[in-house]
Image (cartoon, rainbow over all chains, first blue to last red; front, top):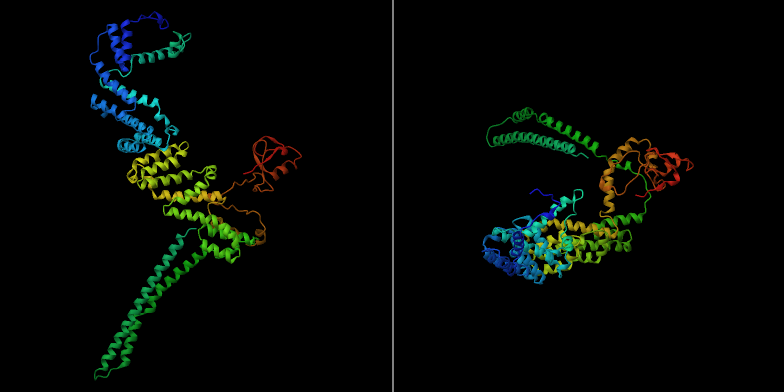
Length: 215
Length: 386
């Protein structure tokens, strides 16, 4: 295709491609009912095993976000034994989420016990775990952990980040893409628009916010 | 001072003395053997009917003793000993100057001030009985009580710390928390950290957690790394010696903490860390050799030395004895004084006031800076304070 990049309005988009992008997003984020409805409405062929794994991923995702991390770990183990066994970083992060939940519930003694039995063994493996453990332990120095300089560890952003990492790890285990097509598309669009904007007369850099607003 | 030469000479004397002693003993033993032999002979003859010529026997003894020649034997080692001893004496005189009174001059000093300095030394060394006795003898018991009281408190704190008891130190830190914070000291955190570690060592995790919340968390914003490590210690309650934090249990930590407390304690009192008397004596010991050498050179001009304000020879003191900067004028080569202070010129260079007055003809005209092409107005020079 020999088309001037600045004439992107002329590029034809295949309807099937659009449907695939949307389905990718729905499956990635465990929107089971939406996926099924979308498939039946568009007449796309049903991916056989995706929906079953999606149900399990959804439960794991839900438990982790809702503060039931140990259940999420258990379910992940049932899904496949070696997902977390081969990923110390992720398992440590999940266990630390549980520690945070105990601290926020003011179960100090239980939090100390848990840290001593589950987190402490990591400190003998690598120095980076020791540094992380110290950061989590400093939350205990406050009756109200929000006052601690390390309060971001009890925030939703950190939890979402860990849970996203878990989701990606499970997807990778089943040879599924760990990023949605939508996400990749937006990232690459941003890069392309950034390059074009550096040329004379080029369009301004891509902004998803501005893009959605202008439609 | 190099003492190895003196030690070598001393060892040489010792060696010669031992050799001479053994030689002498040997000679005496030989003489005694000969005499005892003759006595045996005389006694045995008395028991028989034979008549013996005593004169002959004694002559034989005399001949034997002459043959041994003990004097000539001992003479050699004795001579060597005397030689070594003489050398040692000369070396001694060379290195130890007994006449240090040459390096002094009369200074009118207030006896009361001198008594205060001496008593202060005793009290800050913890020698309270000696200090009390001294002040009693010089008749200043009232000021003794005032001077003694803070150091008594300090030594009670230090003694408790030697017994691994931090309560007095923590009480002192709490009482003086604001002043310590103003001086930028982190000793309060250090004391509380040490107490926290002690509680952990005793295996009480709940108590340690409570202590951390009460006493450590206020420091988290400014000392986050320290707090994180201390909280990490909670995972090793009762077995800190086998943890990554075992360095916190080192005995040297207590010594460092005690020294730091002593330093901060004296700082709050507005006093120096070291006793002024010990500093003076230590500096004096360092300065004495060059001063004695100077006195030998100036032997014939004693009256001049007595009235000098400043020594013409350079006397180097170690950095530990330098407390204030001293400015030396590059023009007059003299040290700045209160009457002749350093002045900052408009070009940024510094001269002493008298040099500026001289170069500006008593502030009546501009003069050129000795270091750069700038013309200087004496009225615009500002005094510097170090």
